[in-house]
Amino acid sequence: MQEPVIFTLKNGIRVVHQPMDREVGHCGLLIGAGSRDEQDNEHGLAHFLEHSLFKGTKSRKTFHILSRLDAVGGELNAFTAKEETWIHASFLKEHFERSIELIADIAFNSVFPEKEISKEREVIIDEINSYKDSPGEMIFEDFDALLFKNHPLGRSILGTEQTIKKFGSKDLIRFRKRTFTEDNLIFSSVGKIEVEKLKFLLEKYLGDHKLTSSELERKSFKGYRPFHKVEKKDIHQVHYVLGSPAYSYPHKLRPALTLLNNILGGPAMNNRLSLKIREKHGIAYHIDSTYAPFSDSGVFSIYLGTDKQNLEKSKGLIEKELKSFYDKKLSTRQMHDAKKQIVGQIALAQDSAGAMMFNLGKSLILFDRIDTLEDVFKKVETITAEDIVEAARQTLTPERLSSLTYTY
Image (cartoon, rainbow, N blue to C red; front, top):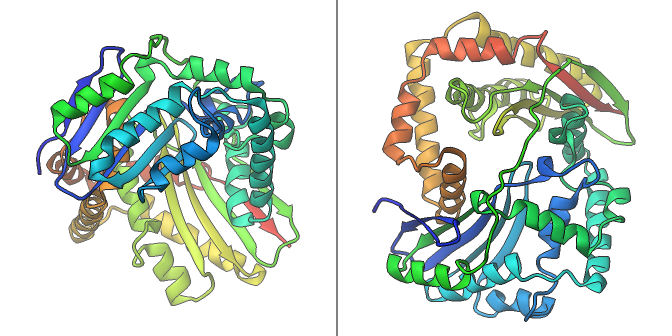
């Protein structure tokens, strides 16, 4: 496979393109701002903006935006996270121009008509309420709020019903102007298109938009205090989250914690928590762990759904697995097998062109570079058993961990 191509448009937007001989192409505009970049009076505004971009531009109504790619079998979508927002598309390779033009139009020419914005408020409020009906999802929102208390990282991405009702078109225009800056935008694409043609199309549809160069100011999280909270809910199963703040993207032990997480509760069915709690004891259907790094912090968490009478036993088994990481080094064979597994998972993920498009954009905005698969594999190989122990002792010890339990 060819190396990714990186270049910059005349207005400062950086571009990364992975040439790939496939019938389907993928492209997206990454905005390096999310819910943590909202000010105190803007809770939920990043997500509200993402929704509102589809509600009409200077030349299109909502119907024409939604039909532009759907009419040729393509897909247009968007999402908001803590530190990023994406507008992205998947399409047949002959529709690269159609997709680029559409993404540029909704990103920079949206007019946020009040009538449409008013309807979208109700849609988002319904989305917020749907989370309340899903305790397995809502518990993560509440856990983050407690973990990152009084900090933007603890905010729900969706906002609240009260804050959403306050936003209007002026708020959306202001937030877009503040976050859609030349330092903060990446266009990422994967597919079969000549690089010179891609440059021409991107300059045509994106390059003429004048952008400021101001960088976002982010307040670092400090003052973590462990907690253990139990909440009564009208539910039929206990939901339990155990975790702590964790390493940022640049931290030297991020690869070690990533590998540790994969061994402990990653996506493979042979992860330790699944084998011990689900397969051996049969006391939980859903158990896993997650490590989500941010630009200057991160969060590690374990989620468990089980019957009330099995909670304490499950907690004991989890604690035993965590202890095994910070009490004793993994053997040479265990390290070899763990690295072999995660390398395979990374390779399989790269086989998805859509996932590759997202990964390329994030890598460029976070590190200002693109690592090859070989580079990534080499970094995995440098992780030592001592690194795993150190990461576990700094993240997974009882005095470091917090928990939130929903019970009935």
